[in-house]
Length: 478
Image 1 (cartoon, rainbow, N blue to C red):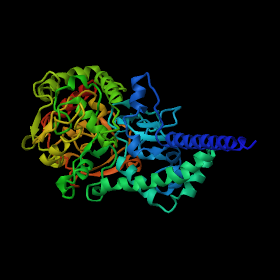
Image 2 (cartoon, helix red, strand yellow):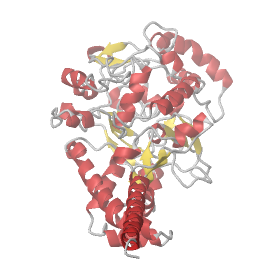
Image 3 (cartoon, helix red, strand yellow):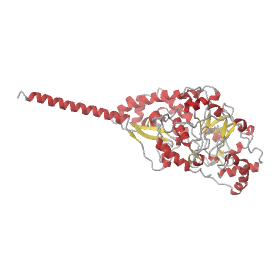
Image 4 (cartoon, one colour):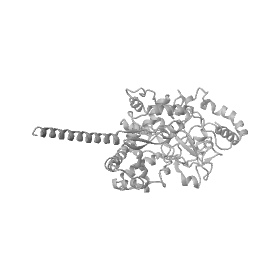
């Protein structure tokens, strides 16, 4: 009997050890599950991948899905309207998330952004008509600057507390004990901290002219990242979102407004990095798939009636006055026209400096995609005019509201107009930018502000009113 006691004691220790190991394993599994587990939705349709697929922004700058959902409730007083759509987010019928936002699980479901956020627009024939959603179109309705400012103001607000956010989440979701603990002690505090910290990249906002909807400064965030100056007027390069359809014939052309890069793939990765992707998190397969789809995405056909006879009258005018710079067959397409000749606002060109080029070429070291194609230029690149009707307002900084205004001398172009209203002006080709509806729904764009000058591009000014009408009608068909 005496020999049995040590055996029983040893068995007890073995059982205790197994229990401890199981508990440690459970804790490690729980930690992995809520911190590192990754689940990404799969998309068989490249258009759906473009709209909702991850490019890698969720890891560094993603917001937990359940927190994202309650932000409009927690900070309702900071919204310009009723919900996030008031910043210009586009939500398709039957969808719960906006185009250009992603839902990817990294521990917990997180919301990120992708290319479609800034490159999907909508057009209405009238204020009462259903919006026509156009993929690849500049998001002329998206006020990205106001949205990011909303995030910071919300995170810093006294209403953004763990208790308030948890209460808002639990109104619509029944959380498990572990989920509740994760959100209360990790997800919500970290979200608040990360949003406030992100503000460091955008301190230059307070010095630059207000963007307004449909515009962005692509490279100032990189300047902050590389500790380059962004405090003088000329350090800012606020530009319109470009269209991104029909990319295949653009391969090898000088891209971006100032022609600073001739690699489609490098351009796509640089855009992803601007959207919050890191060098480590960038989703190359998804970017490649979306890029291949965009190469073949046709420009949108003009959705309203066109006068075919007037189009025929406009074609020879286009060939005489526009084709040498703006057709794919022209040797001048994608080439840079010096500032002294083109005469448009110089800020975007001046903002892209040799020091920034040198710094950008350090990105991707050790990766197959290391940057090597950036360069400075002395002007703006000739752009193709495919789908030009859907790319208003015009010029690189979006300072001219319609094509008809662009055919007027600068002193006769609108000095102040309203951006962001998506009802289309079929006569002048652009969006309605004056009058009570535009004022009520748009942003007052002041062309006298730094970087907003509407001068230059003095082509077609001598055409008669009838010739201008014919040329504009032809451009609708492109």
